Image (cartoon, rainbow, N blue to C red):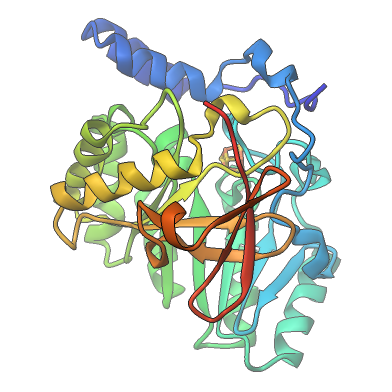
Length: 332
Ligand code: SF4
C-alpha cells in the first residue's frame, strides 16, 4: 500500500470543482478532482518510488530543519494541509504527520541559523504554515526575523488555492512587515484561479509582497501546452511570476501523475514557443535520493540522442558541471 494519506478536500477546493461543473468544463472538473480524490492507482507502488523521494533526511540538521544547499535551508513548520494532494511528495513521509513545530523546535531552528551565518534564505514549508493559527504564524516569522534582519523568508503555500480566506488584510499586512519575504503559491491549473483566489493574490501583491508561483507537471491535470500556457499567461496578468514547473516526484503510488521525462521535455520545448520569457517558468526536477534540484533547461528535448545512457531502467546524464545524475525511465 502506498500510504495512508487521508482524503482531505478544503471547502474552497470543492467550490472550484462545483464552479467548473456549472460551466460544464469537464476537463477542468477532472483535473481538479484528480489532484485530491483517491484513486486505486495509488496502490500500485513501483520499486524505485520512495517515502523520501528528495532524500531530504540526509540533510536534516535539526528535527524540523533541512540544510541541503549552502546558503539556504527549509523549515518543516507542520505536516498539516488544507487538502491532501494525492501526488504529494511527502505523502508517505513522517513529516506529513508532524504537528505544528513546538517552541523548543523553533528555538533550535533559530539557534542553528544564528550559528551558520552564511544562511541567507529560509523556505517555510510543511505541510502548509497557513493552517496554523495567526498568532503561531506570527511567532514563527517574528522569531526568524529577529535572528537576522536580512534573512530572506519564502513562504511556500497552497493556501491561495485551498483556503484564500486565510489571507485576511490584517495577516497580509503582517507579512509585509516581515520583509524581505516572498510568497510562493503552488498553483497547478487555470481553473484554480477563480475570483476568490485571484482577489487573494492581488491583495498580497498590492500590499507589496513579491509573489512567484510553482507548478507541478501532472499527467491528466495540466500536461498540455494549451493548459500550461493558459495558466502561466493568467498568472502573469494577475502579477504573479511563474517561477518553477516541477516534474512530479517519485513518491509511492504516484506513477499515474508522472509524465515520462522525454515527453515532459518535448512539452516544455513546445511551451517555449508559446510563452514570453516573463510567462515561462524554469523547468526542474528534484533528482532522487538527495541529488538536488536539477534545471532541465540544461538538456534539450532531443537530449536522448546526445547525453543520456540507459542503465537498469534509469536515465543517466551528465550535467554541465560534469556531475552524473540519474532519473527513472517510466513507461506511459
Ligand atoms: S499542499 Fe503541498 S505539502 Fe500539502 S498535500 Fe499538497 S503537495 Fe503535499
